Length: 579
Image (cartoon, rainbow, N blue to C red; front, side):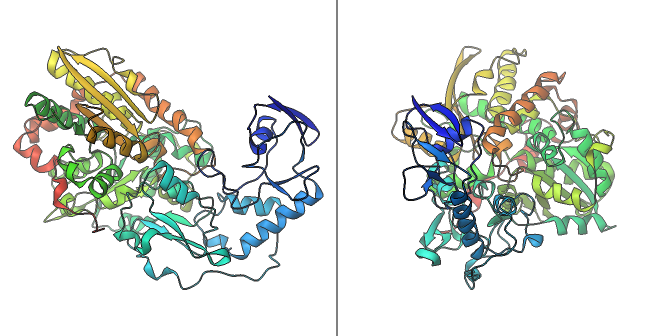
């Protein structure tokens, strides 16, 4: 252990602890911009500089280890002056038009500058103008060079956590910029659109394509019947912007907000999550029984970020993906067929909007395989952040609105559908129904809880009706790459693998609310879904009465010809850009 003094307070911490971590343990906050624990500890921003007695130069707190007897000052006159100069220099290369920035009010640079009382920038402004030519305005991911502060967070999160290396540094010194690696255009890269670079950017250098204008236009069109679906993970996070507790930020309160915005019908993606289990679960059992999983497992296909990753990195394995569409796309297909039929309208009258915790969903709904000759199954996707901006634009206060029920028949769901938003949830929901199909009775709903928690790559084996089922659950694309390399080397074998591109699953998606402590929120958000599962009287997807009604009235049975037409897809029918 090492004992030191920070701001006249004695602190004892383990050896090799950084000054920043030591200060945090003592309740002393040192501002920083670029730091991400175990991911980006390169002191690029130098905002965390502190004064250490006996040291001639200022010391960066995020990557400097403590020493016995060290005396640290985090707010001495010299520290304040140095920190102010460093922030002013950063601002001199930053587009400071905060009023037109999507991160205004939720920007770490803005907060630090305000805290330091910086009202003017004494240095000449040097923005990297003329570098935007490579970017497309239609791609779901948008990068603004003039807002980038070169903290390197996006590079490190993409490389170390997601194992993609989409971003790199171009140029040197003050002219350095962060750009797509290998001089590629972003739309022609292997970007999986997980959006982790967005949620880890401390400023507005990266954001999703804004589709709120299109949404408002659709709501104002009297010729359109607007139908909205809300993903399970959205309900775990949307209330954070409004200071609502998890218990207050209910789906029913969100339904009231969506009706005030003008949506005609409010439904729940949990419904189509249950439908996905009926198709994907039966598909898995068919492959298992037919001997189709002797070499490679069946991979889940709910996460479009994961599908993009597999197609770009391991195209030879695309055939191992489940052919089941994601819950988002199944919902759109059903809304524009069965539901349109029930309303007695042409499918072209239905305008289907998804509210998702995900940026990759914007690209998924635009795939040619997710449309018919009448148009796309899902017309547009809004992230959780975009939904919040729409609510704020209309000055809606969720806390003041009473809860309202969702519409029927696409609003009914089970607990199994709810847990889709957490890592391990798809696997658990599928195993519950697979066990029912094989045994003829429901298992204990907690029988497969082992897949819920643990490291980003975890495995479990279950025996169902005498059949051993080897499962793996993966969270984060870096872990997905590790798993695939183990499979290719013959060091591991599984029957069924769930992969979610974002750490923690959809609850940590690239379209979710941004916070410095995002990683700490993932388990809390995920637990909320499991709490909703536990309190739902129906915990098995096959118990959803509206899903049963859909099969009886329209689809016939899981994997039927009609189900194959509407609810399944060919992942090989579209291509990632040539590398």
